[in-house]
Image (tube, rainbow, N blue to C red):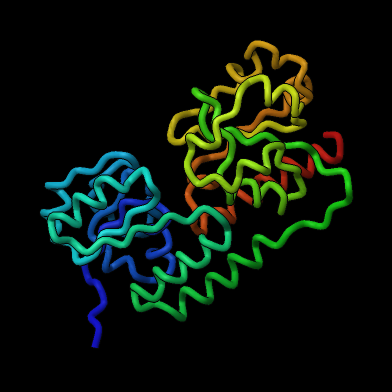
Length: 258
């Protein structure tokens, strides 16, 4: 009989969040600093950032599984494998891949029933809103220098919420460097809403609106620049539900002319 992992280290926040939600928190022994632990959850050592990890502290926890996410963590995933640790590396980029990953984590933790129940909620919460032909043009900024447009699942959520992603052709690119855009491209697309989440640092809306040439962008003129918390939009797990609710609110207000 296959033995389930009993000492899991989560170097990605969405994995830690999911294991807590499905009742497997007792098997988690270490987490990333980017995971906001629920007040009722017993604390766990923080052993990594997103692009950094403290190998000696991870080794001291003697994990029987380490979960990583994305190409950014590929190097220290490889390093952990070289040290003999089992590693589950995920790289979900779409809503469908996110569902598949969460389902896989449920199986790995032996919590299939709990996982499938929450995945049904996830799908229900992300049901697309009814929209007409007039979808507000939305620019999502994942980073400010260089300008990086939204990853695959972000564009999907924008469209589910009733908006039109101004760079839909870039969503298929899995690496951030392939989603770099120029200031001129954004100006030409003339978004009516600007959403930003800068991968762990605070968004400066004043800096966005004061960029050269951006004063005539519809979103800037109407002061429709909004920060979305990274944990609600950049971590491809159940927390996307919260980000989606925020996007529906923003896009709905814009459609009403508010």
